[in-house]
Every structure is written in C-alpha cells, then in structure tokens.
Length: 171
Image 1 (cartoon, rainbow, N blue to C red):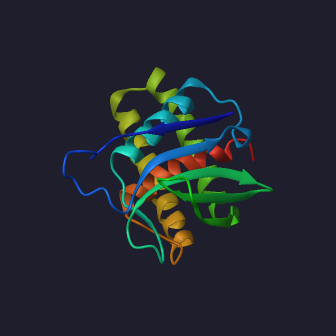
Image 2: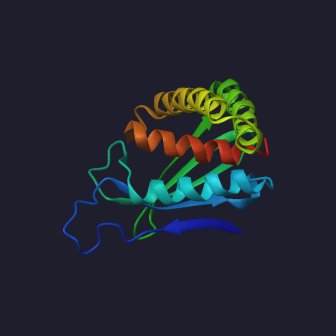
Image 3: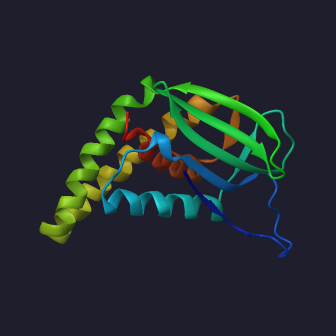
C-alpha cells in the first residue's frame, strides 16, 4: 500500500506548471508507524509540496512529474515519472550524509512536541527556532545530494526533507 496526494494546482488557470511535481507517493513499506504528530507533518508536507514546488530532473526540459520516495537497503530512492506514467529516472542516494541531521531533527522534534503540551510560549518558540534551523540544514544537505540530478529550490528541498525524515523513521 502507498500513500499519495495529487493536486490540480494550476490546471486550467493559465498558471505555468512546468518543472514541478504533481504527485508524491511514499512507499508504505519504507515507513514505520508513527504518532499523530509525525503523520500530520507527513500529510502537510505532501500537500504543501504538491501545491508549491520547483522540481525538474536534470536533462529534462520542463514537465510535470510524479515522485515515488522509498528507502531500499538503507538507501533513499527517488523514482521520477512523467505525468503520463513513463518512468524517467531513478536516483539512489546514500542516507549516510543525512543520518546526523535526521537524528538531530528527530531529537528536536520530540522536544518540540513535548513542549507544545507543557512549556511556556517562549520556550516553545526557542525550540521551534532550533527545529527550523536543523530543518534548513537537512534541506541543504538534500539539495546538495540532488545537485546534478534534480533541480529544486530551497522551499521544495525543505518539504522533501520532511518526507525523507518521515521515510527514515523505519531505518
């Protein structure tokens, strides 16, 4: 079973939707069960990513793409297909460069979710600032790992990092 979200963003509106994701599929076999906070973050990240992104495999001039994310043998797999379902490319990335930042992000998210329930607003804000900083670091690492493979902007890298984090729960 897989989770997917698609959007008709830009369809019929005259908006340029070239060079973007129109669907993201997370391989359910790669995801461990998670609490409601993580499930919520996953759903929001997919929705936000579909609504607004800049994503284009290198060597492809524009288009609308479907991304299937999975973790296979401790490697991150990006399977990219055209809107019509034609497989365009698959990139397999080592998770090693992301391990430390994912671990740091996991720890700070746990602190953040606990703080939401028990801490003062200023404590929550301080933890959230740290969480955003680690999230930005993870997005930067992911963007660097995709360099020369897929062109993405920083907001897209941030949303993708959220999904990579969601996939990494099992590993």
